[in-house]
Length: 552
Image (cartoon, rainbow, N blue to C red; front, top):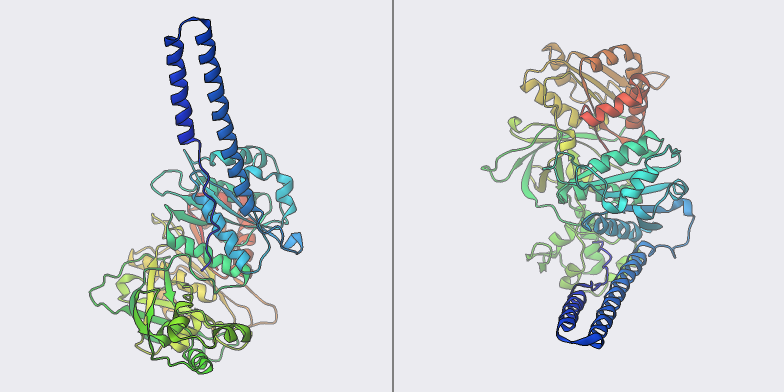
């Protein structure tokens, strides 16, 4: 697990300042007790001396704080490499929490081998911002939706004038408290300013409500994708519950794409209440391929059934069980370093596997939690960690660790407005849950635009979608199967073809929800929507919660 960089303890002027204040008071008393000019002169000199000591202590403390901050902010400066490949971590903190998360972010990327530099927004100007290619902003909000005090100058001087940021790629982590009216307002303002001036989002803004650990794990997920190291151990482990696999069905036999599966789960505890909303996320605790665990045990000549103390769970377990939930060695050098270890020593050195997250495709009233998962094939021919566990290695009726995480940024509209659902591939999962929620409320004005490879093999949940049409619950359906004709067709092309109708729906108050791949689909859809509706309209819809995305 990546550890945050520890800041050295910096003594403040509190006790020393108090001593100075007491001394000054005594001096003033002396002015009253000592008669004559000499006494008053002595007392005045003493007050001046104590004041100078007080100022010096403040200066030293401030200097040490600057040096400590500089130490971690420039800790990656000695890494060789092209400056254009550097990732800048820029933070704006009011209480210190944003700076702490920035430290953890910087350390995680450094551990993944990336070139990293960090600084406060107070130290960042427009010229510096334009000189970098990738920036991750970690910002809090204070007062009535204002920037933190340290970032007020950045908000006024840098975000005020026009800027050219077409070469900038960025991500925003916005810290806030949902109990306040202006929730994450500075993060939203920063994100909107960056988009308006041509910067490209690496992923959608991540909101953190009052330090929510689930949202921070989602941020860490993006860091893993950005660095190419998706096996980063979680900063905080999810509080899982035990669920069992009740259904696994291959949805696209014969497809040219990766195998996609419909999965269903039920809690092991039959008394557990099912509770989530359309748009929420399932965090999964994956396991390694049993064949890999067996191969490692054979290579180390250890017994998988040997009892060990599992430090992560603080309980006794078998060595095989611990390895199933832990990061395994990647290469021969790592494997060699483990040879000769005892079972307990190996268990003690294990790092837990990171979680994986998937859009929930069902509602609690369905009686089970359903997912739509595509197998990921790695370069070495093995299956991805999460998709391999869910679609291949987890036995039928087998148990797994699962936690539901609220995803408020993709919850359903509060009113009965028209709803336009746009997605591709397994992004249909999140859209399916929204359709189910609309149907349950009797809201009929729904428009689905869905894209995949082939209508013959990749029309996921075809019968269900056609039934929605026949029942009048799906007013319009546009499909884009890219490989069924010589010219590739995608959902953004269907949007352009229906531009006039799209404008009518938006004029009628429609909300637009997008779910699916960030690369290709989400960007193409955003460009089409901007061209049809206008960037200002799209930005305004996002601010009103009428344009929402869950992309990955």
